[in-house]
Length: 374
Image 1 (tube, rainbow, N blue to C red):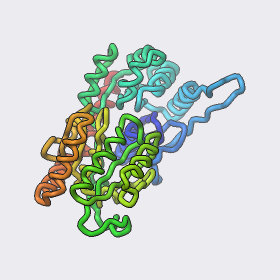
Image 2 (cartoon, one colour):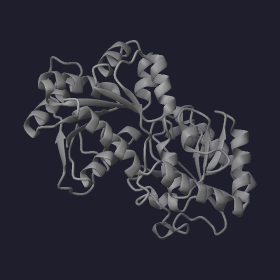
Image 3 (tube, rainbow, N blue to C red):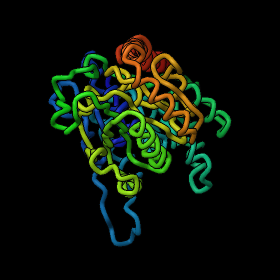
């Protein structure tokens, strides 16, 4: 098949999933064309079946804001017509679905269209009256929709009137790539003394990630068992982390790692992953941690309970219940046997339920079913 992937190229779950899916499809022999404004950050190696097409937005003086959606639709149309694309797959509804719809209208019966809903494209956009109607209209022009968790699917069904066939296809992880590799990371290089624990949080540091809770949990854990915290990523709430690090007198124990392309090394020397989010449509960062044998402390919200088995591969608490999260974390870290069991269960959960090959096959089946209807 010849597939066009329309996605955000930057850090974030939707871009990661789109890129990893495209790479896997290319490895299966399909031809994959990424169409976006920059090269996806996980496209690091040459592949004979992968192509990148950059969207160039002209900045005419008449426009207060550059018309990206028009430039994107035009580029999708050009690439699809020239390369004979059969499937156009939009990841994250806004603005990709509308651009795909416009291009498909220009192409006629040449292509079939799919949109994957990733989270805030429903949970936030559906509540924004300036975007809601056009979002609903455009996703209803698709031949099929998918959501990355059952929770997100149900939220979408409650928020919007949805007409196309709607499937739940979970996010996934490449468990051959995401696995515990201690040789990649030395705790000594992080200046972590022997016997002390390492907690890690990876995100885009938006308000929904509840960075204040991350810091509160770490402070409580450190008071019970000396530990260090790695903060990986960047975003508007990074200043909160800076301020609380100083206020809690934890500067020598909190490591600001910034954005990292390869987090396997950092996960490989971590003991617990913290994800006390307000909302998570799936929890891809938690799944990647689990694949590296890192148990997860997280909120009962969104799709997280579909990923993390409470008491088995991690511990779940109500949003904002940092006291319970601290108690759960300390209990896990204080018992080597319990930690080993949870680490093993986390890896098993990732490999048995969310392996890339298994999930990607569901997308291939969806594509093939759409093409069979031509």
